[in-house]
Length: 219
Ligand code: SAH
Image 1 (cartoon, helix red, strand yellow):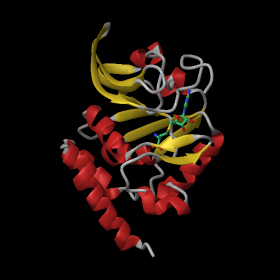
Image 2 (cartoon, rainbow, N blue to C red):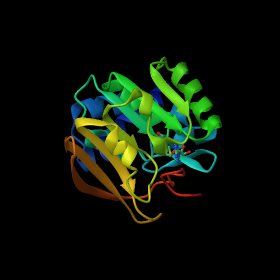
Image 3 (cartoon, protein in one colour):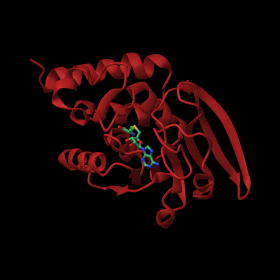
């Protein structure tokens, strides 16, 4: 039998081994990962694996990212608190919940209505009803709410959609996996001036495809 106590122990171990143990050190990220009940973002049959070191299925052939990847990407956004953040790929809603612990406003876009509905229900269930979710093709960004201090893309793009670059404030950061399926690189792009961007390669990674007008044509 797994109960709430077991989950909180599992969560502590996840943070120690997979997050801190692999070099994520931002206290705001660690605190957020410690707080959010990840098991509530997967179906009941998978809850006992929710704090394990891998992604899990969430329906529509999509996945909730590995805990380390969520922590690493959040740290890469370099949030201090108070920011406006855009997420592309709501999926389970877990990454949005982690961001919401740190930022002041989280906007998240999902292409599957079923996943967006499911995420909304889970987030409302844990009282995180300040996250704005929209169902549409997120390769356009979220023009009406731009600019953002940070943009995080949780699906792999063939190349960096220019709208994301346009929707960043000067000083803002974009974190995005780019490349063919199976050999993607997690990149961070910082808008250093109105027309200047600085690009860094952070990590090899593997994400489901970003499918849309400025992404992949199909899965
Ligand atoms: N951040 C999620 C991980 C989701 S996996 C979590 O914490 O659970 C990536 C998600 O991106 C999938 O749900 C997929 O449907 C979505 N996605 C793919 N292409 C998209 C697009 N063009 N616009 C919006 N969402 C997209």
